[in-house]
Amino acid sequence: MTEAAGQGRRAAGFSLLEVVVALALLALALGALYPVFASAARRATLVAEHDRAVMLADSKLAEIDGAALRPGTDAGTIEGRYRWRRRVELMVVHDAGAPPALVPYQVTLEVRWGPEHETRSIALTTVRLGSGA
Image (tube, rainbow, N blue to C red; front, top):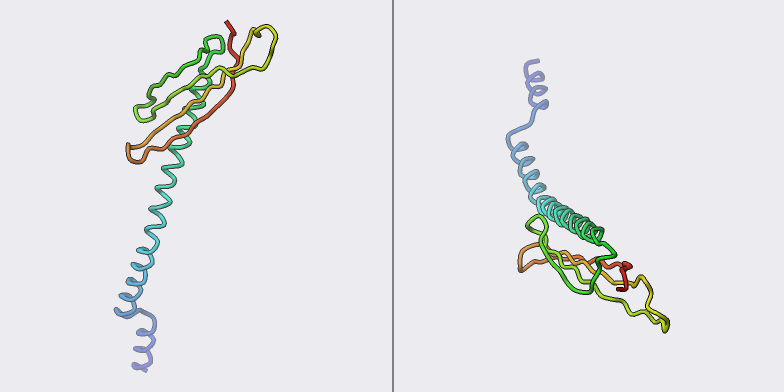
């Protein structure tokens, strides 16, 4: 009876070899999954930066006052890491009559961010009406 009881105890646990093999398999699996998680984290950061740049560009476009529109370019920085450039161009209107009171301008706002060797950018373009004077 002692032998049967001893075998029951032995069958209920894991041997040191089984534990070592299980840990080795776990280490291999985690090692293979690490690049996947690291890549996902990098992409999540890129997406967050892109979304922030789009929001900032949209905000700068919303600041435009139609009465103060003049062709030209201006630029600046936002939050110290995003650089923006706004280009305003008078659109050609094919009308032989008198100049209209409001004329269309094409406004392009470009936002750049990132280090010099990995600069990323987005550009938003819209048409706004400004005074013809």
